[in-house]
Image 1: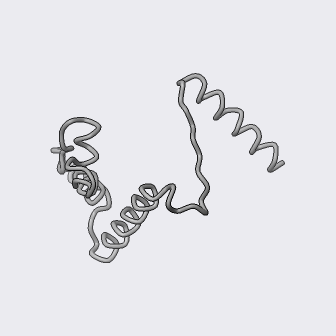
Image 2: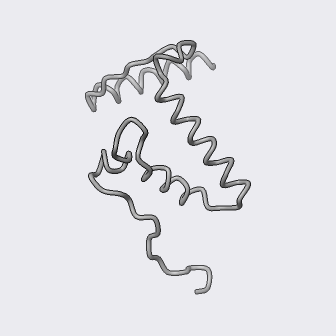
Length: 99
């Protein structure tokens, strides 16, 4: 049963890729020099989650802060690269708990 589910997921993923014309390139997890940026991004996200848990902060706000922080090798933040502007830190919304 497990193999059938994996095959079905691969077929659905292949259909999705062909529909949206996505090029899917994989790399070996044993070669850290090939996927160093991905490893660094995962490390940053894990450190952010640990820090927010220890300081009892909101994970979503810390995620926005991480997304707005410029990269070391680029002078722009990830949100500036994608959307040409920083994302908002706080969105105005009514306090639904008191209504």
